[in-house]
Image (tube, rainbow, N blue to C red; front, side, top):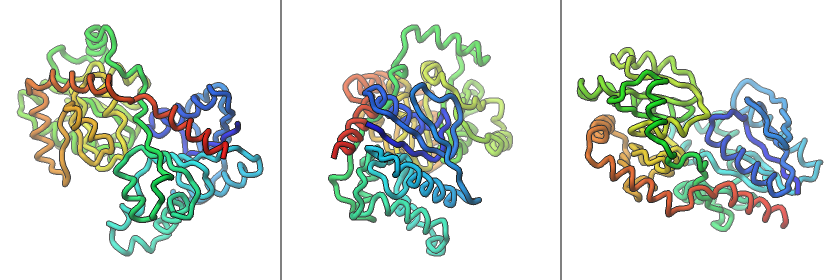
Length: 372
């Protein structure tokens, strides 16, 4: 069978992009052809994947989205694909991979004047095309809590939602020779053996709460602060956050690493994952940390935070967010005797839960839709 996948843009370090590539590879391994339509592609193209860069018009993000949608449908539809699969909300899809949260839910919490802007009208139209009760698009859902939001605003039938398990790579499991990995890592980054490593992973520093993590670092007691490093791994512009770190006199304790392929080394070497996101539909890195037996400190807005809470693999901060609570709990987790229990609980959860099957289940559903 032939599938046409569409995503806004591809770069190697985005969570949605990694999920897209896993699904594409599973589909190809089953003998299907996967053609990809996107506005940009950064990095190498896997063998067998056919990528078309679509021209886009306009100066704003919503105009780019409209242009991508129009060009994708006009290009793909005449080629008679067995399924049109979107990783972005656009009209005419057979299957949509729901990596984003409900736009209508967020928009209705803003000032009413926002709801008359062209941006609002455009994004709402795109989302309606996918989730409206009259639409035929099947939805691959990553977060159960988002389903109720979509049903609330669009009356989407329950049977169109297909909940996927998390989809982490098996190399995130606690590696053999962890002590050597950690020692080599400490030498590479010039970190003392007795120092604590707090890890924050994610592209999009504002959304991921990098500012919150920096403020929490600055609030640590002096002796603990002096022996703790915050490593931030991901693709974004660090300038505003470096200035914040300098204002709070913690710039020596904080390093921006950039995007990395060797995330498993960071997970194996750190003492704690901090993820104080403002919003996060899922948070795959939370499951990856648990697989590597790394304790987690996370806000409850993350779709996968309930896994951390249910497993007892760290601390989940309840909404509304309180910076003082994050500050206090960072100190607690860096000094608590519970660390060993958090590590073991995370590893035990991963052993007994399907956290690898996202791409396979998504491919099953795409095949089923294509045969209808």
